[in-house]
Length: 183
Image (cartoon, rainbow, N blue to C red):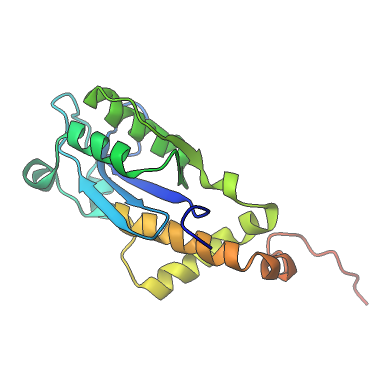
């Protein structure tokens, strides 16, 4: 499988899960060839939302964003330079909100389309995604809820599922009800 047939993946970490006030604090991408990039994002002056419980999950503090975060325009321009025409995510509602929030404040239009990873998967692959994803997380041993790690996890899960598509058709569907007969 060459890099032209492999998708790119994106993941965001955010100030909270509030779809009105939250904003992106980190973005990570995994390009079709597996190359990773990530940026901490310096909050725009109007971005005030913050959740201590979200910080406990991703481990990124506000002070870190102020000192190590990159300006929103720099991050948006870097994404436009690096990403192909389509990029995929696993939480489209949240990721699209944070993507558009980043680009709107930067005054830049995205040069790519954000799509749900479900657009890449057949029904058998959808059924097995969570199980395979957990296996990939265990194999990689990386902490989750950091944007580059999560983008890599998406990439590796998609690789595993797409390379083993025929085998997935044969695996039992653990979500289906019992359809056998009792004797």
